[in-house]
Length: 115
View (tube, one colour):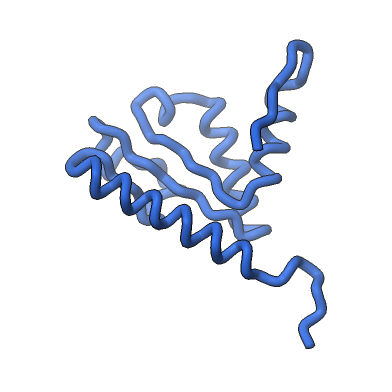
């Protein structure tokens, strides 16, 4: 689902709604994204959603970023590391997305009674 941010919309509110609405959050780690306050804010919100609602954060390490460059709040997570074998990393990321989505689709809705 694509949401268009219109002229006059509050950008951070629209981004926040998107982060809250979806079960997966993919962040591509580059030197620019790691230094960006906007990306840090989005990552903080996604991290909160991961703790509170089980959102899955999918960190992607772009070429030129080392494991030591990964922000502290992502170091516990397995990352898709595109520094070496692109095809293998892409296949692993795609497989993870599909399995996570399948897991979310088979979960009971929040507040549903179990009989």
